[in-house]
Structures are given as C-alpha cells and as structure tokens.
Image (cartoon, rainbow, N blue to C red; front, side):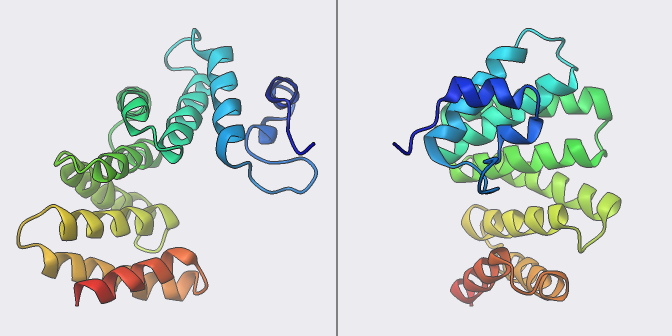
Length: 193
C-alpha cells in the first residue's frame, strides 16, 4: 500500500505529460524516489532521439534535477552540462530557456563548491535580467543563487552578496510576499550582516 508502479505512471505520462511530475489524484508534485524513477523512465524513452528534440531536452532536465534533488550531484552534472550545450546551440546564449539551464548548472556546481559556479550564475543572472526583467521568478532565483555564490566562494564579496540579497528581498516581497524563497533569502541576508 502507498506504493506507485513507476512503469504504470510512465505509460500514463506518455499520454498526459503533466503526469511526469504531478499526481493525478491529489495534484501534488511527486517527491523522492518516485520522481527519480519517473525521470529515469522518461529518459529511457527518449535518450536516442535527436539531441535537439524538445522531448529529449525536457527528459534530460527532468532526470538532471531529479538526480540533483536526490543528492546525486556527480550524476546530475554531465546531464546539466549537456543540457546547457544543447540549449546554447538550439536557442542561443540569451534565450530564457538557455539562461535557466545555465542557472541550474551553476546552482548544482555551487552545491558541489565548484568555483565554476560563480561565472555561470553571473551569466544567468545578467541575461535573465535583460530578457525577463528584475522581478521574474527565474531572475530572482538566479540572483539568490548568485548571492549565495558570492557569500560562499568569492573572496571579499560579502558586500556584493548582501546587496544581491537585499535586491531579491525587495523585489520578491513586491511580487510574491509569502514565498519560501523570500523567507530563505531574508534568513541568508541576516547571516551575512
């Protein structure tokens, strides 16, 4: 009881794509091992499709994020690196889809304490500000992660991290005042002060 058949859900998701992420009964997003199992099943269905295939890119993103959320950062990294490369080729460097994938890779590298995170997050943040504006969710999330990178990795960048966190708190409170991201950013800001 309480267990889902991944193969049954994967078969159903082939006809209703939202079922890759969301329970058809309670409408909540899947969590944990079920998310990872569905992501792996989805990837197996499309892994041999052309690299630029939209279905393949979505499955690649799904698997990379599921692995990352399960703590398999080493397994997620090559998937996100491939996704960034394909998005750059397919959409260009300044497309929001590309910039979001760059932000995802930068965030993963930040969790791995890899210095390559900082320039990726700077690129994503700058690009998303230009294409989506300062108050878009993607921009604000990239800004939070850039602030984390500045406070954790960049020597002497605590002032920059503080400024970025303050900007996020102001912008996010205007648009999504009850967001957990806002509360986390406020907590991170208080830790820098």
